[in-house]
Length: 94
Image (tube, rainbow, N blue to C red):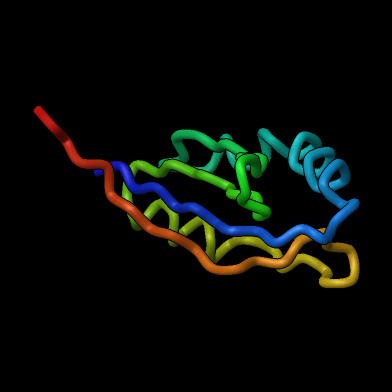
């Protein structure tokens, strides 16, 4: 069953372009992870001020395996701070 993970990111004013540039530079870095199905970076509009990173995975195990293998980022080089993750399963409506 496909699962969706949505990370909420707070981005300091003036750092939005830098955040988008960094995501663009590594947009295919997860493509080869087993079970990875897709990725989107959502820019805030209409009153929201956080960015959202949406990823789709074939199953929970695929996501957890990838997450466990990630290299922690140096906090001094980040342009955003994580504000939690939303987790969903895609409902099969057939």
